[in-house]
Length: 417
Image (cartoon, one colour):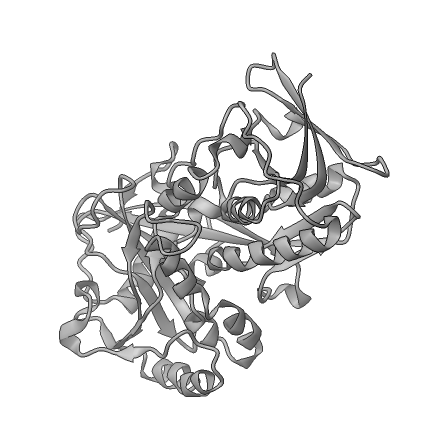
């Protein structure tokens, strides 16, 4: 059986794992990544792709200042990568929009007062990436005309999650290792001097024995199972279930948040049906509906009742939207996060050692994955010292990038009206 010593083995091929791998390799560490499914499957590819800069957090009140402070620099950091000006070069990824919009529906004058009364305070404290810019009606996106009382623009870019995952993965193809299932990874970390991880190949005819100096768990929901297998505690997880609605059929592009009662009642992002195609309105454009509406309906069944609730929410937040001919589907998603007090959304990133060689990693949001990778690099350097060299890439089956949620088999599309 071939054997490979390495500095670190990353579990999980989503944004967190791929960005950690990138950061470690760039610093000279010999790092590898193992994935038992497709890259980004689940939480990463299901993200709406908004690189938040603090505006969404600001709407929740002062208790989320820590989250806003942690995320405020992320839009420009991602932009520099998307422009190819800094590493990792993500110029091959697809930028869907260079901004998001915040809008207050026509029936929401009270919510406008409660939401935007907070923004001057937050901006003065230096916690927002940039102050929202109020737009004249002629500048409003077509989807908001006739539906909004006020529209603001925030310089928060929106990326294609699938294309961004592919761009990150393309940088280190010989370090991405695919196994058929989680049980095809055997982990022995009870030795006082080293961990031994054995991978079984896709055809079960070949195995690879890895001897990493550190195990980095960045597998989202999968972290829980990995910790159980390692018989380790100390990194409790919380799940935030969502029921995401998808719409297609003659819709105009829209990226933004509907603001009601001082929170984001609905978040809408637009995506081409086929990854990489131009973003144009029409039958090949898909809306993803997230935000509070996805959390509020998380326990609903995907059926006529849910469709009626989505229609009602759209009628309230986008009353002028023409939904004739629009089809709807839904899928369930889970946001896995480090557990926080009262199960509130955690602030910032989390990297915690649960043994001498096992570090559990949580980015909280896709936008924060570069910050998480910085934290992991600092923790690893302190724990194992200087790198021993990048090592050679491996010849091993490589995982593919997951399908976009709207391309998954089994979705049931039906008329919205």
